[in-house]
Image (cartoon, rainbow, N blue to C red; front, side, top):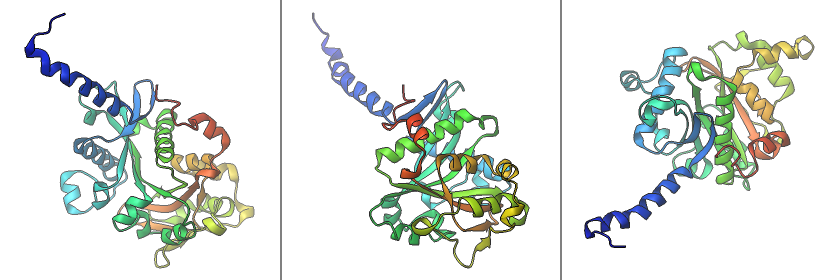
Length: 291
């Protein structure tokens, strides 16, 4: 078979293009129907994720961000430059990938954090003491979790956690942690839920972690005998309930974040604590959904 010399470059380029496609596809952590979870690939996708964060944190939750963030209608900070950004995309939405982002998480590995000044959560919680007690373990911070209102379903939560799980396995992480929030800046409004967490799932011993002393707010707001567990669970934000199902623990004290209009608790989740049924569901090889 003869080949036109004009097509020689195209023939050389074809294997490279195929190889690139395989490389791009390999960063997809999971799929359910039209929904896909993977890491952001371009600055444009990170910008779009920051827009989603703004819509949730500012438009919905009434956070007060720095002036430049409010002007640009983006939630951003210095950490965005070196974190990885986990996305959920709805491929049924017309347009580019930037238009399809409906949920996001910000992921920060310990080695990257230490090379860039530390973890974001360290501004509220004494995570340095936590990591120092585990010099043989690799920690990973989960942050800036948000999903657009129309997509707050079990499927989206599953995809976000499939992404977190696959990412943790890929990088050999030993434990995850990060802030989870209650709406508003009055912990007393969440006395039932906070007291339930304090009495039932407080991180202890080697996993114990406190808020920074000047920011710490008490979570022990009700005696244990006054707590109705069923009502307390119903009062927990869905994200925190999801963490608890996986086997997470919670730090001993909370922090009021006036800028984001939230009351924050620190979630601590050793990989070894994740329930076997969830390990079996998400897959020890992290490949269950990526087909």
